[in-house]
Length: 218
Image 1 (cartoon, rainbow, N blue to C red):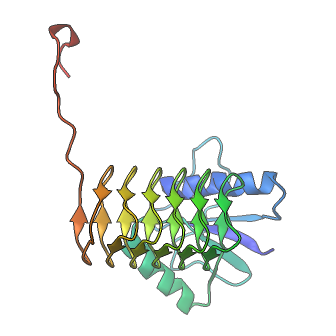
Image 2 (image 1 turned 30 degrees about the horizontal axis):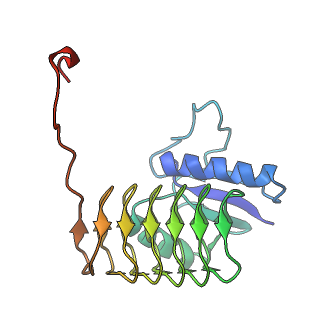
């Protein structure tokens, strides 16, 4: 297996680093080359990370290396992915050892599946989709390219999600819901009807129902 370079040195990039280490410990033949980030050596200084900084993303040589997409923004992920593909880059498909991906599910190039996530039968995830920890993708669901699904999201069966959508932590959809390209689903939102392309859906914010004097100021 070629060496793997992580694209992006932020929080998601660090998460993916830990998932790749877990895969290696489980027996996967993984050799980490380092990470590229336009913001500089952003992973340096973390005690559990010892990866070489490979420079800015655009300047990264892509020969003899597979890339792990560690950029969360769907639009940024799409543009970076296109730029790197034009240079001949190949993206690694990453599945954490604790995740469950059924045999009839389809994962395109560059899909990343985090810890304890579940991808049900006949689900289809297109290129560069990220599914974070504890999220579930229901049966017969289609997820468009470059979509980012945060932790503890539940996309139930038969859903269709367009390209470059974003789901915040804890978001939920009812079965057979269609979500358009570029839609943003806020943390904790429950989607009950079709979401048009580019729309943003948020749950109602939390409210203080009661307080006591002993609580003091927030």
